[in-house]
Length: 264
Image (tube, rainbow, N blue to C red; front, side):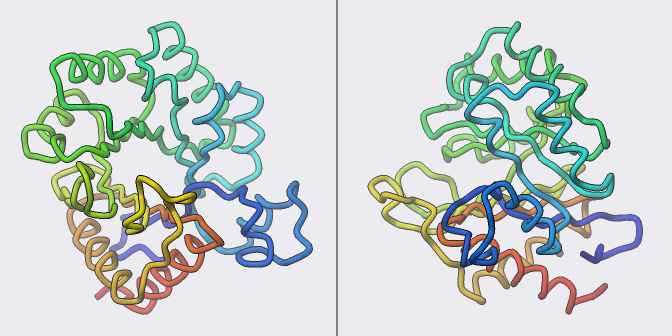
């Protein structure tokens, strides 16, 4: 993946890699489950969000195994354990999550931790204090915060995140309910886009990530990436529309556009 300007880094990948319906769509038909990570790396992406860490507390050994399977110039973003983002975990558990992340970063390719907060996470004084506490307790970890509620997406929030050293994640989501519009913030040190699809059956669908972006929609994201690369030192872009390998198809489409654009 080419950087748009010398000295800057662009990372593109998908949110997860371990999906059975990617066999025969994103991966060869004969792919074994144990070979999925190897097949993902063969696709040529330079980044991956690890999401098994959301469902269970990953220990140092597990994380180290992933770190060693990719080169140092690869970018892993580690999704925070759901008890941290959805249940307001206590400090002991939060410290364990940070310790395991730091201890597992054997190949120095962990670039940060994603805090994916749910739509029920309102912008309240209590939640602002919780974010501040997370920043304090995990100060050695680069933290990126994703909000799925529109009340967070404003300049006041951006200023607060900078104050406590949390990075903002821009999202693309269907424009329904209280889900936020995509808002690109260019004053951040590192840009981060998570592209979830626009499935309008988000609240009722069996798979809310069943959505394939069109070429025109990918061109919009290309423009966002160019804007971010002009203002920041690094940009991470992850497609989370993982149904049926759609995320891979769209990520490859964006990669092709970026490569064709060169430094323009």
